[in-house]
Image 1 (cartoon, rainbow, N blue to C red):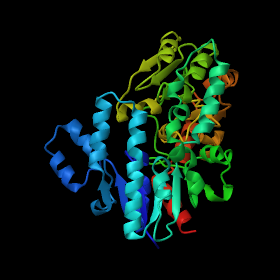
Image 2 (image 1 turned 90 degrees about the horizontal axis):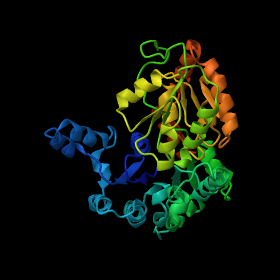
Image 3 (image 1 turned 135 degrees about the horizontal axis):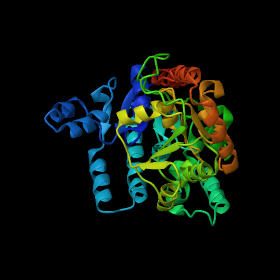
Image 4 (image 1 turned 90 degrees about the vertical axis):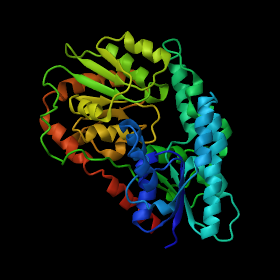
Length: 408
């Protein structure tokens, strides 16, 4: 089979797409930014532990170093522009197309196919080739116009109760990137989406259903399915929920906080918000809500412990391409509550610890919080079923399904 050139910036999806191609012998080249090859990792052994961890984070076993092309000048320019205060959006607009052009050049040279993430596909898909490469797109976010419509409607619904800066709306903010993020799917032979919701956002703008396939992500397993969950199990009394994510409108945190204030919950109930960043109006709302604690970031180990010791993970997102935190919670045996506008309908049912509510509906969220505050405390069988179900969603399964679709 003809191999593929893959391209994206950052450690997106834990490098699982280029790893899948490499394992199948289908990776021609992986074009990215800062990737830690063997030589860099050897040098990193002399660095402080925190820097060493950052280097190790930027690689994955299974992708041969010789098949990776790091665009170091673009990486350096990106960090320089960030330090100088340029808006991130304008920097990505400037640099993302360079990854696409590099992918086109490599595909032309090696007569390879293209497997590109949606922000890095437009230039490569429109390059004139001497061969006819297959063009596969990985659509990792819903259509940006679809997102903008949802967020604009929500701002109107909550006008007077909370005010958001529309510049945080990625769809509205990145109008200049219309071709790469809005139109690349039109020129793909195959579109892979991580969730049914993402697929539906493309169908709403005219994508052909036969070209759009859903391959849900996986999760790293910290323990064997069905093992004892008692070490960090939540108390059988009270109700303790956790939210993990950016404190922005898209995540539905304002819906959660309004619902938390209105819900009739057991005495001593707590909601922990773990947010590295949070918009000012949401911060005020959180700090004035009873039983709510705001934590500005935490370690990976502490986060796993928080999932394991909570009755419920809740993130009622308005728009979510997937939502990896749902799987991270489920694998710790913690049931999750989210909306239809996420990956959750792909992951299971209430018997699997997956609970759904309507996006943007505070009254419905109040009802679910009240119901789950009675159902979840002390429900060890459900926590075990939750973990067993999550164990089926492995990264190896993701990679296997991905490759199977390329062979169709």
